[in-house]
Image (cartoon, rainbow, N blue to C red; front, side, top):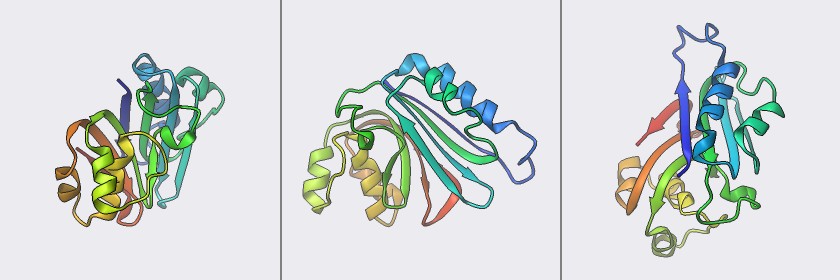
Length: 170
């Protein structure tokens, strides 16, 4: 299964923590949970979002992106063990973006095809995880969106339309 991690730093503590080191260490510690792809989303104090992902293991990802996460107030980190959808397609690698929602997932969704068919939404990638973030993006209340998902999950997401500096967890 995949590895997920993240953080949200308070305004009072912002600037006191080496966030680049924290992003790197969290990614490296989770590498054993998935080596097919690595991704990091960061949000700075002004709400600027940066999304980076690649089809490589975490240690190589971090080496090639020294300083990733510098000045981050919010971060999502994902190491992928691919089960559905090839890591060759960047749309299958996390963090996954659907509209203004950026998310990471560990688990397995059993009704992802049904969710897309029921609502008539377009699918960009082939991973089950995308259905979760499509539901969160399209439906007004996250609880209603998650109520449609059948399976197991630990998820974290940022909704840029609501507030990119808020980290959501379920």
